[in-house]
Image 1 (cartoon, rainbow, N blue to C red):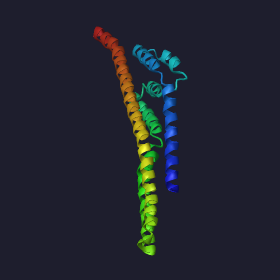
Image 2: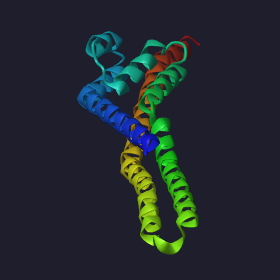
Image 3: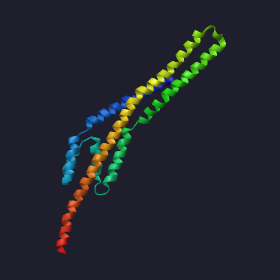
Image 4: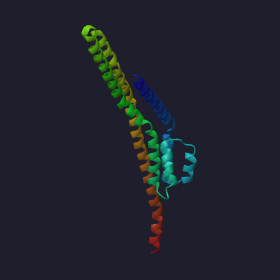
Length: 203
């Protein structure tokens, strides 16, 4: 039971930490700012973008800023690098929670097997004169299995929820990263058109 208690404490700690993490990220989200910055990028108003994004802690905004800062070199790679770092932060401790979900039932079964072995050892020692002692020992041994399963069942729901949050965040990052890339390419094409036209006129 002591290892199972440790598993429950670890799982609960990770769940609480991840819950506060996502609450903090939700409070930092600023969707109107993201839309406004994309519109400013469409106009090529980079100075205005710099003023707007100052102090923003929105993870989508930070990734877009990474691309904007490196737009003359490699916008896509800059956003990919910033996005990968943020997704890594979002997935922090998830492997620990996954391990607890897997290990807790196994520890419970292991405890039950040890208890049953002890009960049958008692049966071999005392014979069938005291069967209630054997059955009580088996019932007590099954508590570990029930505890392990309880820990796993109660942990799998937040685990799947946090995973879904990460997947949705990845989709959001890809969506706005692609939007910025398209906006920047259109801006380059518009700026190149007058030069092409002037070259044709000279010819």
